[in-house]
Image (tube, one colour):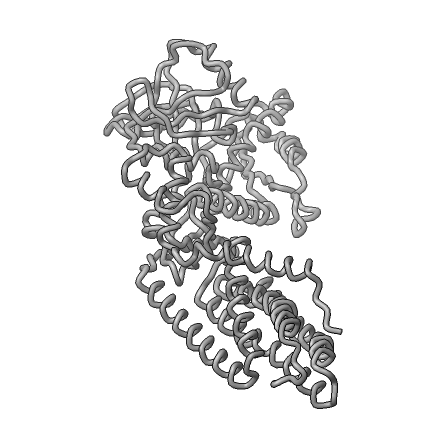
Length: 554
């Protein structure tokens, strides 16, 4: 006897209703999106305005507000390809080696004489010793300070090499260390760029590595490539230094352990600072836009425990002296320390606009890029292309749906109507799942959706043909329907499973639009099996319980 328990019917109805509620906001995409963006801005502390409050009230807060993310080809946005200047990190690595090697050589001062650092290339370190006759002992001391390279490809290698050149020791990074630095720098850059873009609140950006030193960034919905570069293009390396002196001469020669930086907002003013930073941005744990005591935009910050302790010690020992806040080689401000600043928090002031203070806070929270980036390609994709793509996709999906519905109804009559209802339910559930999972819909994704429509009907065709065969062999209506679903299930499962494997492979090894196609296809297959096996069966069983036909008109 054809059985379909009440609890199963209620569960299927609940799933379908939940899918309809989740997908419903996509019918009012622009309206819901404006409301979501306005509410997010207000939550982040934006100044309430009549326009912002009107946008926030455009969609009721008690209704679902999730949306399917639209890809760059549908929504428009910014496309940027950058190259990470990994060579910049070599100089920093050599700078960090100097104190270590200096201490190692000073332990042998009685033998090798004086130790002095010389000017050299950024990726080299030259050290002159007072007694060239003891060069062998000096080289041994330097080489003993080297460390193994922590990488799979550099196993057994040391991080630097040291060679003699007259009375000088020339230290250079090994090839294995350079390769490890390149890999580490690119991975750090990827993570920091991702954090910066995520801080802006954009949905589903594409941030991926290309080659050995390039990063592709695609952000749907952002106004222009220039706007994106303001977020990802700045190194945002923050540091706090003791001030040695001020000057208006740009040709001033700083000492060996000093640096010369220009003032950001004052033309012709330069600061000579101690090279070694008191605290760096790496020790920041939070940065937020705020206002100073005069009501001007600023950025408040907070250090971690070690940074707060170092900052507190420095301010306690240098009351009445200036200290410089440096961002990417420019002095933002150089206030005089008025009192001991305990607790590891403070405020950065300058001639900021509200937008600039907010952007600086975003950059500082995300962290500094380990190296500068060079823009190789940038372009802005206009929303007109996206609108045309969406309209074309809608037309294609509508034509496919109408043609398939007409065919299935003409072929199977009332059962075809049930299949058509299941088909519409299938599309709704796909959109609901994409909304819940935060998946991105691209133009290839729309193609996957159209393909899914055809495959969804294929499952119903298998079921209906099986029911026909069983009815022709003399089975009663109830038994024919039951056997039709049972015997068609294995064919449906096999056909969809093989396609699902392909969809998973496309997602795993593909990128951008290919992954979008794989996601839509995989979700469509899962929804197709559910609607064909459960939704269609529920409707047919309900019809059969009410009508109790003696013969199936199929």
